[in-house]
Amino acid sequence: MKVTELFGIKHPILQAPMAGVQGSELAIAVAQAGGLGGLPCAMLSPELIQQELHRIRMATTSPINVNFFCHQAPIPDAEHEARWRLALRPYYVELGLDPDAIPEVLGRRPFDAQACDVLSEFEPEVVSFHFGLPNEQLLNRIRGWGGKIISSATTLEEAIWLQARGVDAIIAQGLEAGGHRAMFLTDDVTEQKGLFALLPQLLEHTSTPIIAAGGIASPKAVRAALTLGAAGVQIGTAYLLCPEAKTTSVHRKALKSSAADHTALTRLFSGRPARGIVNRIMRELGPLSSLPPAFPLASTAIAPLRAASEALNNADFSPLWAGQNVKGCQEIAAGELTHWLAGD
Image (cartoon, rainbow, N blue to C red; front, top):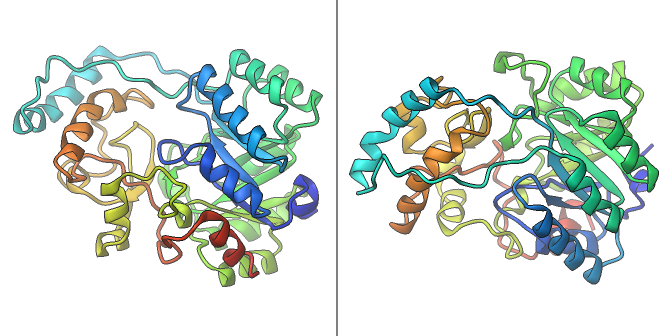
């Protein structure tokens, strides 16, 4: 089944929910253009989720996707945290910050009953998850209002695991994709495959509709994925320069520079592997360093460095999330970009 039929949308295009660089405005624009707009909720409080969904429902009656993380909250390790802060201390000194006064920051909360309560007021058509799935009780609540459930797989084993739990579609997240890897049955990045190696495996060994994601940034790439048998595509990086995105000025600058040709997986910004444009801290500490504590605790100590650095108009300590293909990034309206990607 194609996603156009499954989700009731015109174009087989899902806008990837991108926490930290977008809100409801981008989701609305894509939905109004006939794609499936996505709202990232992993970094939002229940009150902000409610506000954003209210804006969406006031602006469009088109189907919408809300996205959550469903990681297991880690047990803080004081010794590991101390090593991490010690590694960052020279940067704090350089920027004139007090390394002993690191504030607490809003983390990424896993999907829970409180978030589900908020969703039940709006009954979003699609609820997507990163890092597996929440418990069956929460999934049944979503199914109760007719919501479709999707999640990402980075390996065949993860896709089979998701299918066994009755998801309506599986996102095949290729290694090219920007942002956090959705991996949840493995933490070995050497097991990660490119999209056009992963996609045929999932199509051959599962019967659930498969959505292709990773490096898709043009109408030709969309058609290629659909020709291989994908039910639809999910696209994130291509939307980062749209005016409806909240991409920061230093992030936009990086996306438009030659630096965007070099991306890498890194644990430095959150504690989990995620793909972004290589910057100073990635070069100096090593992108997959073991120094950061477990996800999402790493972000606490690096957040002040990011804020101070961006105030100086540089991106030395910023997570410049991007996929391996930035050629589709255009400074045009998200609706126009959606129509272009769909071949209109």
